[in-house]
Length: 290
Image 1 (cartoon, rainbow, N blue to C red):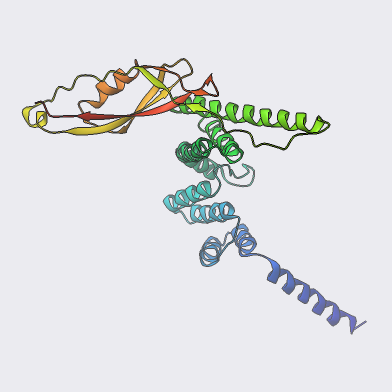
Image 2: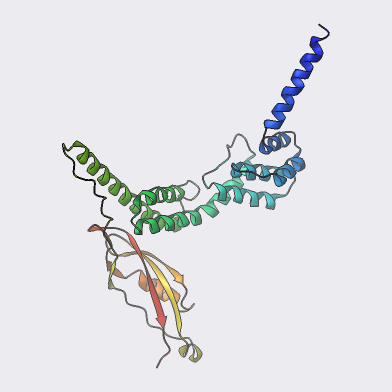
């Protein structure tokens, strides 16, 4: 019996050592945080390299920084967590309410820009005819825009409508391809598979796109050229749903240009003959009076 006790202790120590070796730096940091050893946990996270799970790494950095009273740095870590995964939100039962509030604020700030980036990438794929890769990106952009932290943002309403239209388009295209594949499978002697032709996209055509008159505020401006661009979002009825300056022309001219753009009319863009939402960039050049 006396020999069994040392042997059992040695076995337990070996098992504990093996467990310590297999735990990750993030697991160790979580354990240190649970013991309120915030500085030690933060130091471990800062000196370790991680291959994945970046959002949790930044979450625990933020928790440690909050524990140390360094709120500004905690918010910066929260933003890094949102950048790593814009859909990541810690469980409210696992973290203090203050951290949840930080995540809500950071996501409300960062999600609109992230949605625009994903939409731009999806639109480029769509315009290149790559519907397979474009569709999930359009759906991701729409999911970002429909997130509870930004769903009531009126400034995103036009973009949400535009993205939703592209989601519907790609779904329709996918459904047509599926129907075509099913019909070919049922045929007794199916013909060679021919890739579906890319969609025929026709851009919006201006019907009424008059620029407001340029009235220079003084003589000096009257002899100088100014240029810029305005981006207009066009609905399926050809009317402008919203407009924004892509590149400012002149501070005194831009408000009049935005107001005029909202009354412009177009033949709507079409996708295979069907009207679809679109956008158009109009370049504006103001020349000196001759």
